[in-house]
Length: 199
Image 1 (tube, rainbow, N blue to C red):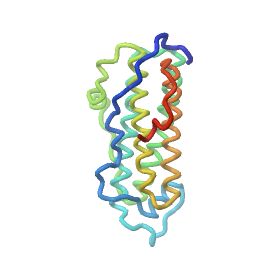
Image 2: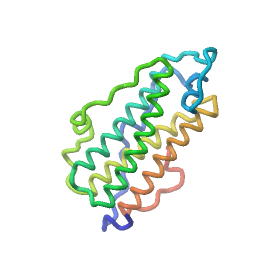
Image 3: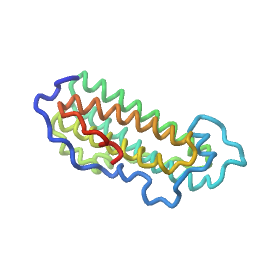
């Protein structure tokens, strides 16, 4: 995908609402039970703690994954992407579906109800999809969302007292960062400065 866009683009200065992921919530950490569930292990009854609050926090993350999946759907349906770019977009969407399924399963095991995805029209309005006129526009939207997702997951890592959950959040952030780096290169944009993520 190198040199898909011929002219370099100005580095995006705005960050979407995903950057504020989990800010303003009343709980700084998830319970040990949530940590185990996100790590793919069963939680014992004694470790559940405040599961309802944990499920609410995880639902914020799930809502953001729904948004990411919808953004790639909108890009794919736009007819603006070249075949190779479309293939990569579908791959990235699949990664977000894995994140979605992981979070939804954990919320269900916590006794919560996973937040439902909105209609594609709702996401199209929220993401201003009508302004997408070129492949470059689609990639810029994806780039900004991946940066927001990276920063969102990184922002919660310091909150976790349990290293297992911090590791899960780190792995999710790593996926988002890999997506961002690939899109950044495809757009012909300069390499980021050190310490740009999570700032």
